[in-house]
Length: 244
Image (cartoon, rainbow, N blue to C red; front, side, top):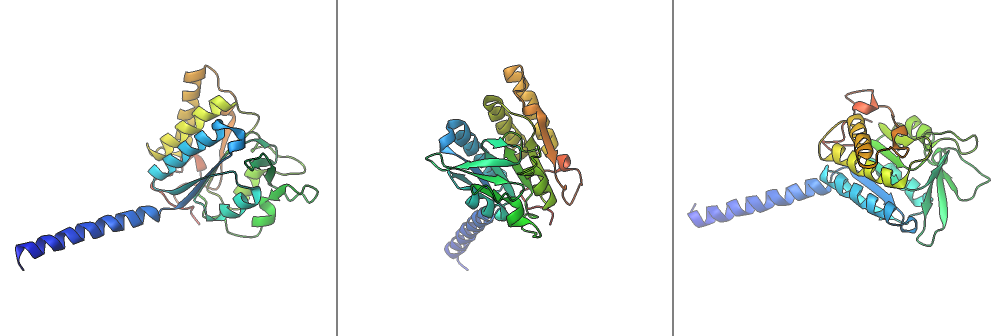
């Protein structure tokens, strides 16, 4: 084989390897980060940063905005990571159209509320959410239980999600913004466990503000993964789906 032909074959092999590496990257576990332009830059900008961090961690992430509760709830079944930045009340979190029309994702089915799309109605007695490694609910009150709407954290845990991050009480927007940005930096860039990443993010908030603004009332719950039953000890990289 002459030298010129050998060089061409080597160049072709390099090109093929690069193409395969890009395909492998594109085929990373699916993640979605949801924000809402109606709420302003605090929702969309923070969500964009989280989406970028998920990509850096090896997830095939999409930043989506202004989607209805029906759309968001249905597409959760495809996710290794689910992140949403929005308002919430005990038992549900909100989704907004660009014009401000609000729909809700709740824990329980609430037939009297036509704006409500429940996790129970979509996922009860299914295994669709058992591939989800992390559900991060950046909204107030998602740890709390409402007698009518139920609890989103409880439902996600019941349906097999490895790790759920949620809050009780209210969280201030500036502090939550810093918390989320640093939490995903430590999870996706530094490779820390979820629990350690959240603790470091909490410390960063206090360093910048001198108070926590409610973000210290976070909860890290769930079923754990193939390594540990303690959800705080789960690592998000290398990128992968839930233990199921």
